[in-house]
Image (cartoon, rainbow, N blue to C red; front, side, top):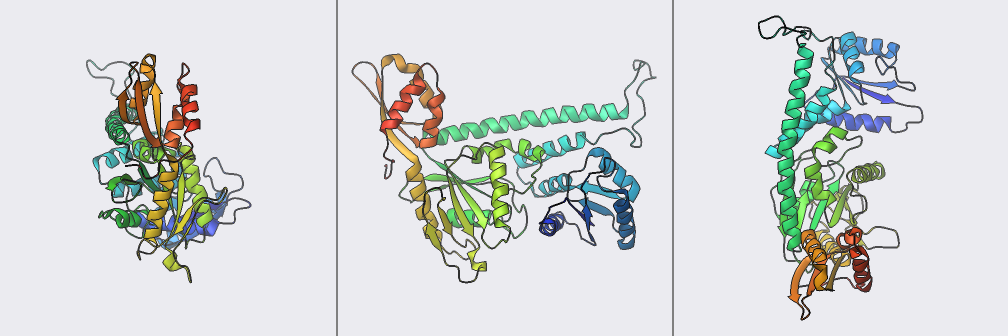
Length: 431
């Protein structure tokens, strides 16, 4: 049984309920009823008004529903009160998405990330009043004193488990960071696929890379990141990354737990923003993706808009629209039908060439610290010694990565700015 809340001025409540129904189906639920609930002033006890809550219980009894899914954020108190009143389990939007992620996670890292997000969500729902939470440990020899309630034990266990998972994920994040640094040292750019869930990212990834990543017409069909090296293009090799799809109101616990995965997006040289061209809500979907990119610090990365699924639009053929003022470059394709992929490859080559610089930087012997920092950033492709004891460094990297070095102190930032200002030509056709 689904409940869709809407506020005054909402015009897309029906579309949001349809998406929520897809989420429920992805989790394995069978929808027996749909209910709209107007919520202008959220009720602190139930979120919904008392009259609507009574109506929910009647609909639940009439349809013999054993689960109520609410497409909104429920506080722990509201969730518990609704469960008591309706006499069945109640789950909010965050809990449903977490459940889907738990079903779909396959890799060790993915399972750790989902469990961490679930435990953080669960920790906010440990409240007094549950059965069995008032038992005490005190009384036995060696355990006398104020004792510890079952609630406090559960909280302590969750804190310990959360800390343990975080430490494991920190190790995974360190391994990913070392891999990224290795790619940077080898001057191999990363192209990351991003987009709303079910926009066709995994299908496109398979077409471009020849990989066999699972792809299906469902929300969050794949969660675990996959990377493949792409060779044979004029821009040189690059790494293509397929990451988790985004969705509106993505739970913050998930964003926090998936930081190491999302780092493949945050540190990419180019984002392929895949859009379902046949989706009537595509503009809103693009705005939702932009909001998540801003949240993870990837809003300013170069983007190429890829409008997918044009085979579902009448009269639409593949085409490529290059940069036009403030208008982003875009390509219209169908990954499922293998339409327009050559145009997409040409656009990727053009974008990577446009954003990439190759410059020669001469450093004096006293600038050894700057030399070390440039190596650490992974932008040095070649080095030749100079007669005065200095170095001539060949820097080959995307312009944004070089610009990020402007923050170096001790005058290094200004020195690099002058060098980059003189490097106005893009590094196209570099061997």
